[in-house]
Length: 146
Image 1 (cartoon, rainbow, N blue to C red):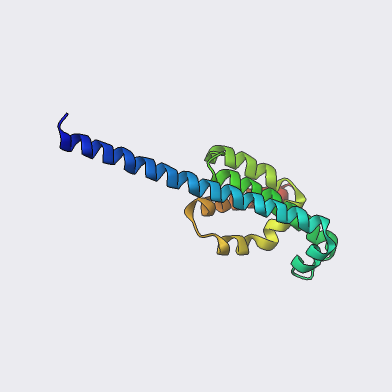
Image 2 (cartoon, rainbow, N blue to C red; image 1 turned 120 degrees about the vertical axis):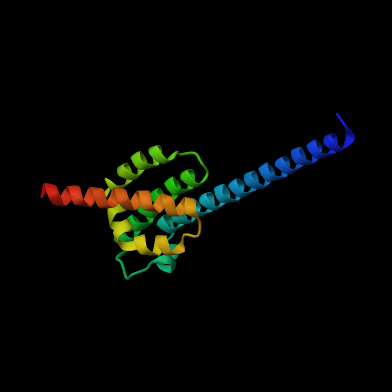
């Protein structure tokens, strides 16, 4: 192997290594953010001062606690999808299971527009679209059955 070819190969390996390190770093940041969010949700449900500070929409405390619990479930599933721990087909199954829960449906009905507005990347948008489709399908089936 000639020297220029070897230098080029070494540079390519280094570039790939840097790209993989950057990807891993972003995944670590995502994982840390998911963990912080889960802890915040847990704190809100345990600490009356946190509950009062975070309460929105003039919801009664019990209803707001259900909303926080549902948000925690949705955010956990979204984090797993963002990190690549759930494939799209598996996500559809998990989304259908999420919307079977009345609390998640209440949460989604109330906060879906906000969740779409705050999303800034395609992977999270795909997650929200899959969840939204599962919600719409579940509600349609409820209405058909009634």
